[in-house]
Length: 203
Image (cartoon, rainbow, N blue to C red; front, side, top):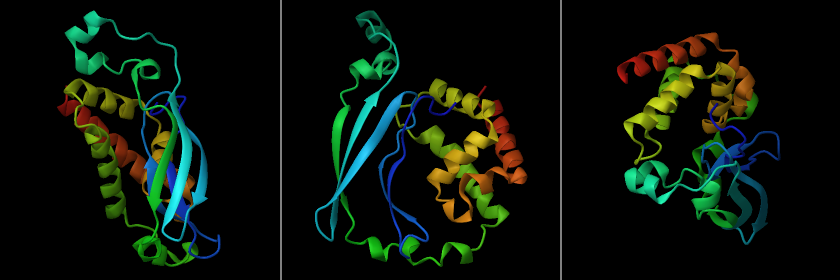
């Protein structure tokens, strides 16, 4: 529903305790779009402060490039209708990640995974709300129609899919990842209720 046929969420993680637990330290790519393929990363540590990430990036899917008539009529809508043909941001990519301050990141000094407390329901509701709003505002050029489409996808989504995405975005691995979040029925009800209320406002 959210990212059909895609590979995304290329993140850099590190372990503060020899591989017992892992912490998110950097995001290289996070695009959520049907057919996007951000994959096959290779890491090269240049020194104590820099890591070079090489990976491939392209779009799958059968489509045809927009006609000039379509572009003239609604450029914003059709300019990237077939990204595999029209999007220049494809190929082998290189990303230089500064890890000089990695050990000073707050998440690197958190207690071991087994000792970390579960977030309260109030905190989880804030996380769910942030997830919904971040989807609406992730693209500054998105039209009202684009936002309605996003809300309609959320309304049709199963909590299993939503919780999986949230576990990636908000580092819930220390709680058991998507499996832990998926079993939280109260948050599932809160999510569906909030999305339904927001979708009603956008009709």
